[in-house]
Length: 201
Image (cartoon, rainbow, N blue to C red; front, side, top):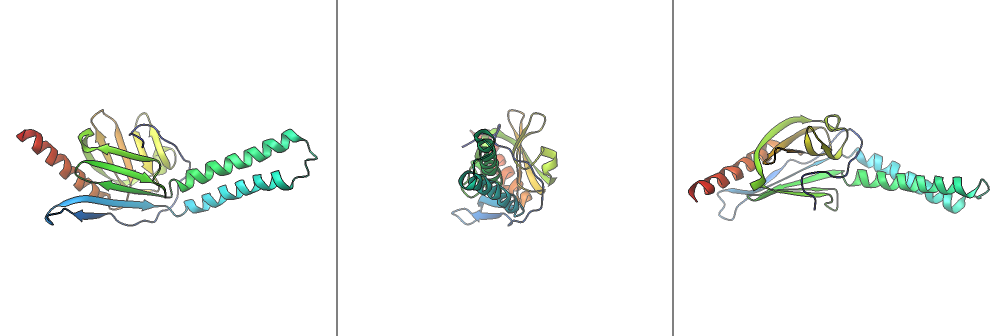
């Protein structure tokens, strides 16, 4: 699990496709207790295919090369292809989609099919939440798990709507997700409830 600081980074900017977020009712059926949402970028599957091709080329060179041009150049070519392929595969598959869950206690972000990297931020660390109508990979220097000193941290899987958390330490955490306005409303409700509890304590 990662906290809201630095994380792995990627490199691209492209289209998206995803499902809108959905609230879940609380046990009494009268109050929304959980919001879940996601965003998907299917274009990244093309980049994953390029990574797989680089990996396959490295294996092909290692297995079928005649090794007549010298050992060092061939080893460098094989290692380069395999490393580039693995890095590209991880960088794309880890950020094909993002899943966001907000409840009355915390916000959790999971990336990719295995949910890594994962970030969990307790609402007690949050001072505010804002809807961002347009977040672009260009603003963050690429897609993926991004960190910029002047902007904070972001999980960007596609261009489009998202939300920005304002944290108590002065930093921010941005996520691209569909139906981000509903997530902001849920977070603000959680913050209001927490403030009410503190006021009556």
